[in-house]
Image (cartoon, rainbow, N blue to C red; front, side, top):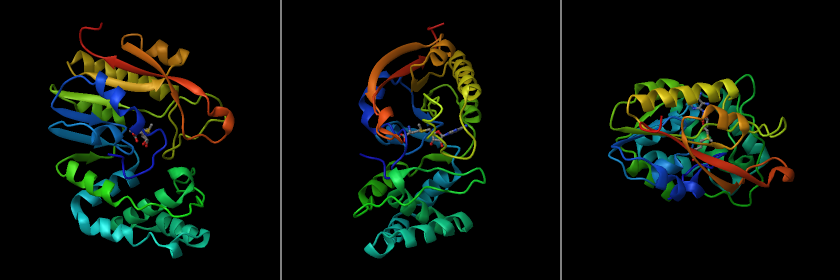
Length: 270
Ligand SMILES: C[S@@+](CC[C@H](N)C(=O)[O-])C[C@H]1O[C@@H](n2cnc3c(N)ncnc32)[C@H](O)[C@@H]1O
């Protein structure tokens, strides 16, 4: 099942490949969950879904708590009258001022489907600033939201830094990490899912946390780009490399094949 949100770097198309590398365990932790493409398409006893984007996690928690009534409420924002630039920018401004989580979460679903490319980009002040997407008839993902609700009725949702989640994992858990990519060039800087970026220091911090978890007997699988820097900091992992076509990109020049890796940090590999 597809996630109900569009998400930059979403892994829906790679789910089957990732699953062949997932180690066994009873609870799946996704510290960089985004749209939850992988978790939605697996079958573990329990899930811990985390993302630093609090708007995203507030939405997931609202859906989990309020159920079908919330899905119905979200659907009311999907009409021909709301699919105009005027209405979009009005809702976007409202979203940035809104303090009621229920209403704000419904607006997040609206913005995700009516905004450009489904991006969730914020300015330095933390304001959502994605322009209008100009879609003919934005799709309301009712069946995808219902699936999410049923799948994650007992899931744990948090919005914290990934390192806190990884360090709290316990034996029996397995962790899948899909961090923002290291920018391939200074201009391919479309990974600001939230205020603050994900630079090499963060990538290094992740590799260290993965290693610590693996030493405690908790396997960690990480998706990333194959760059010299990443290969250097993943020396202790088992790596699979494969070519992949990127779908979200600001310019045509970046729509070429970029090698991706899956890196497994697991006891017995060191
Ligand atoms: C490549 S996306 C994940 C996509 C996801 N696998 C999917 O299929 O939709 C990376 C995610 O990491 C989150 N993120 C960025 N920095 C983070 C941090 N320090 N801790 C936790 N999550 C973070 C972003 O908000 C974003 O949703």
